[in-house]
Length: 168
Length: 246
Image (cartoon, rainbow over all chains, first blue to last red; front, side, top):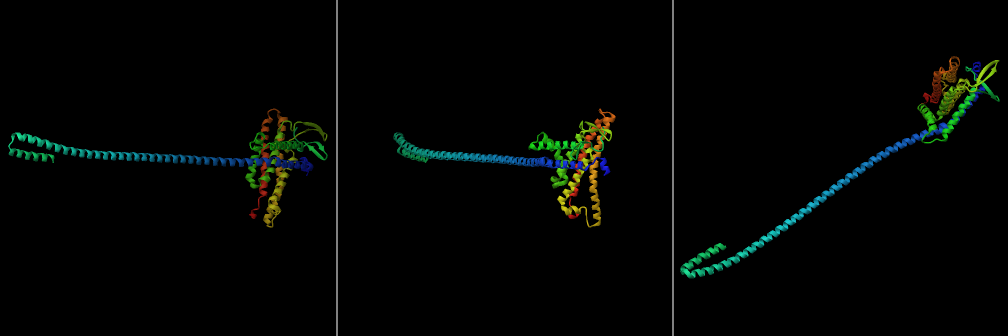
C-alpha cells in the first residue's frame, strides 16, 4: 500500500476515474457505438441490396435484349416466309396465266387451222367443179372443130382420167 | 518541470481532491461525449465530415472486435472502443502545448513546486489502475453473463486436482492482469512525459523535443491499441466455453 501511496493512488481518486470511465462507456454506447454501428450495418445492407439489384437489372436487361433480338429474328423470318410465299404465289399465278394463254393460243390456232383446212377443201371442191366444167366446155369446143369422133372420144377419156387423177 | 509520480492536487470539492489528471480526464470525457453527440445528431446514409471521421475511427475497431468476438461484438465493443478512444485522446491531449507546462507555483513541505493545471491522464496511476480495474471487472461480468455462474466458476475451480491447480494459477493471473495493464500504460506515458520534459527543459527547448514528440504520437496510439486489444482478447478468452463443455 505504501508503494501505491508513492504513486499517488487514492481510493477516492480511483473511484472518481472509474465512475468517469463508466460514464464514458455508457454514454458512448448509447450515443455513439449504437447509432454509428447500426448506420454502418444499414449502409452495408443497403449497398449489398443495391449491388444485388444492379445485378438483377443487368440480368433482366440482358434477357430483354435477348428477347428483342429473338423477336426481331422471328419477325425477319416471318417476313422472309411471307415474301417467299408471295413470290411463289406470284410465280404460280404467272405460270398459270401463261399456261392458260398458251392453251388459248393453241386452241385458237387449232381452230384457225381447221377453219383454213375446211375453207381450203371447200375452195378446192369449187375449183374442181369449175375446172371440170371449163374443161368440158373447152374440150367440146376444141373437139367440135378438129378431131374425129374417135379421137374426141379418146381425148375425152384421157382428159377425164387425168383430171380425176389430179383432183383426187 | 519534470512530472512527479503522483498527480498534483489543484483544489478540492468536499472530500474529493481534484488533481490535474482528473481535471484533464473530465476534459477528455467532455470532448468524447461532445463529439459523439455531434455525430449521432446528424447521422445520415451519406456521411459528412464528422461522421466520416467517426466511422473511420470506429469501423476498424468494430471489424477487429467482430473478427475475434463474433456474435459477442455488441457486448464487447463499448468497452474495447471506449478504452481505445479514452486512452488515445488522453495521450494526445497530454502532448498539446500548455498541458503540463501551464500552472502555478506552490509551496509543499517547505519546497516550492510547480503544479500544472492539466497533465496527461495516463501519467497518473489512478487513471490507468481505474481503467485496468474496469477492464478486468467487465471481463468477469461478461464471463458470468455468457457462461452463467456455474460455467464461470468452473473456469477456476474443479474437482480434478490438476485442473484446480491450473484454475488457481489463472485466478492469480487475473490479478496480474490488473497490474500489467495499469503499469504498462502508466509506465509508457509517464516515461514519455519525463522524456519530453527533460528534452525541453534540460537539453534545448527548440527542435530537440520534436523527434520525441513523434515518438510519443506513436506510443500514444500503440498503447491505446494494446490496452483495447488486450481487453478484447481477455474478454474473448474468458467468455469462451470450457473445452470439456463442447
